[in-house]
Image (cartoon, rainbow, N blue to C red; front, side, top):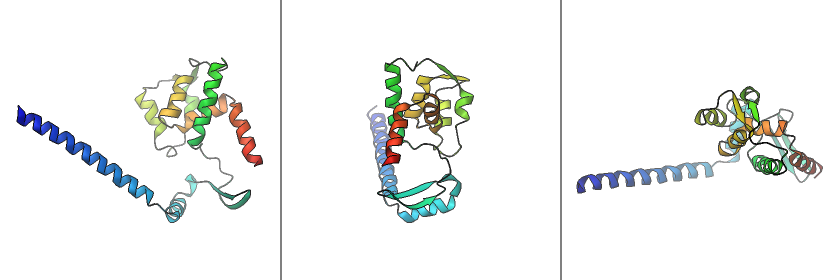
Length: 169
């Protein structure tokens, strides 16, 4: 019995130590990325990139600046706060149903690390979802399609005002 317990504890320690070492290696590798890595990625994936480099208000560099790209994850927090305000003010109903086809039309393959299909699979999403489920897909899975849906279909006025402010800056 003691031998079995010793083996189980040993395996658990081995799994934990291996996981920690793997996380450390991945973090170290990502921390060593350089601007050349970014340029190589852009060269190898020109259709998946759009870049605008600003210094103060001067545009220093643009690449595919006219191309619409899925939204970055940083705006998701702004959308979530605006979504919560909409629920609080009763302008947004958490149980409102949406056809999944409308979400899928906003999904662009290989742009969110598989977050959208993973959200649909793990939550067993059928033909309809609620606005609450869409917000979950945006925040828990980082689905760009869910984010784009909330932006386009809920008239997120706070975000629009904020975007207008930054455009003037």
